[in-house]
Image 1 (tube, rainbow, N blue to C red):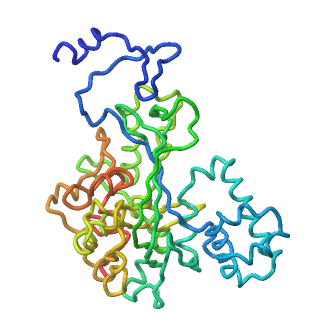
Image 2 (image 1 turned 120 degrees about the vertical axis):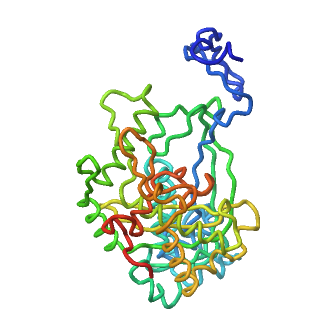
Image 3 (image 1 turned 90 degrees about the vertical axis):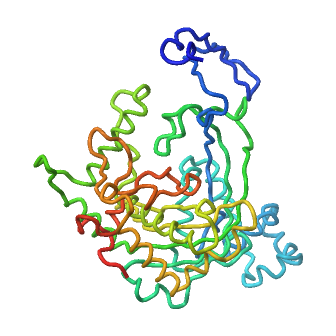
Length: 429
């Protein structure tokens, strides 16, 4: 083994044959890449690259569009408006569309839905932007009609009084359906969240696949929206903040995180970055740090009370920009069995429970067993880790729970630690 490892071993290894075992083919022009020695069963032999999306109505505020999407399997075969009277005589269409007696209105909605499907199949951006439809449904003023795949509930009293300054909206997702599809895999390097082209993805088939392996997960969740005014004022305040270290040098906490992101990409992809590459491309921004940290704090607290382990929970962060402001997070169950629909998570969004849950999560965030080491951590040069005041004791969760691999976390952006101007919430409710 020693003869095959290290620089000396690489010089003695045979040339790669260009064989693709999972495809049963060989590279046409051979292979000029350097072989790597891996231990059998090593975790970096392959990394699955997946996409996931929630089954949400295409238009949460339009009940007719939601009905058409629900029964599209029947309606997609309607050749024209002259066939609608006959279709109305058959169940379930005979009673599902009684509220819309006008066949012209119904046919216009069918054509609109068909055009939307065609556009989604041809527009590359519509295929990849999976979070926008979800955000529109969760944050819309009117919730969609309940269905077997998607049921939302908003408490009549709205956000509890003690949390009016903390959340702008609270939505209980009583039913959710998530579809996860495997679109490829990588070797040696895990897929890059921000720039997938930097890591070579191995194909799943010899030609362009017409289907990919996928799984369906049903569960429940809690959607929380942070007031946009609060986040905008916090971003402005944090950008203007600075501190002086022991060397009398002035630093900015956001700039330290941004510089660490650039160093991380340069160190990780030093052998493949093109000339003129923007080292900051894909940086999620300040509000993602705040929302992501808040999500982890709530997940760790929820896991202690809802009956699910933290590995059974998952998150989706809806963090926008100044041009497209988004400020929400979804915590939901993500296990492929009946455990995900027992109701223990949704019940924690009731007013009294949510107040107690939030108070406990923010109180626990102000201290960590690893303080002061954790509280003072900041990715200063030459460090390239992508978190600040965060560790396994206070913020990290399992890899299956976090959507970014426990990166972009910092407690000082949510609760007062050191500089109170950096905290999104200056007080505990």
